[in-house]
Image (cartoon, rainbow, N blue to C red; front, side, top):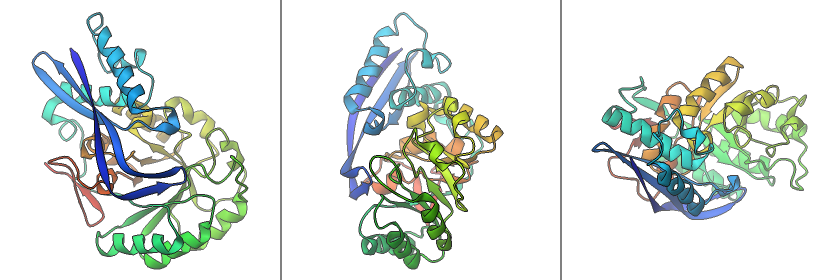
Length: 324
């Protein structure tokens, strides 16, 4: 068995801004595994928030490749060699494809042919965000909008989006910006002020490690853990703080752990969201086994790119369509 890595860069359709900054392109690492005359490819997106870079991910995978003459690598023993994160995600998903080839994921799992996916509104002025909302609804047929926010002008921004998208579901993503790091946000008051806008869910309002700030705070809107939930080991500490968790394969370290996380989360009473880093259809496709049963799906990564990979998933009328 041999593992090859490649750094690829995809320009974004427009600059993309969240509470941590703005970028104009997306860097990904593509992995190709060759074994017994077969080959399989997968993709991951290193995330600086989790201490990852293109270089660190490639280094992890190349170190693993050097060990392959001494070990028989499988999805079951992969966690012995790579910790949860982007590097393990790419290798895990490539192993799934190597094992099942063209049958993965469509004939290994039962997947809905059409899935509503969120479409993302980048952080900007209230007026610009309202314009984005109108365009996504009118031009792209969005049925679910994900609104990126920081700690400033929250109500103005949400109000502008809702006025320009009166008939769609809306989820909000604070990316840890509503508490800690010197930001003074009255969460109880804010949750009450947001209630009239008919918001479906609020994602990660407080920084990871400060989740207990949410205990006992009345919130009519469901809260979802993202940065605070990577693997199934994180779940016990989130009970009572959140109603939902966001499963991303670049956090779990691949589909194998994502399925374990999903099962344990449901057993503990959490609702399920499946999300993504910005990436191509190759990465989104690997998450479809989770997406087909999720309460909320946010797999619009390819929509944010100027150009997707060839034969990618089809995004139309606010839905993700299987390209079989």
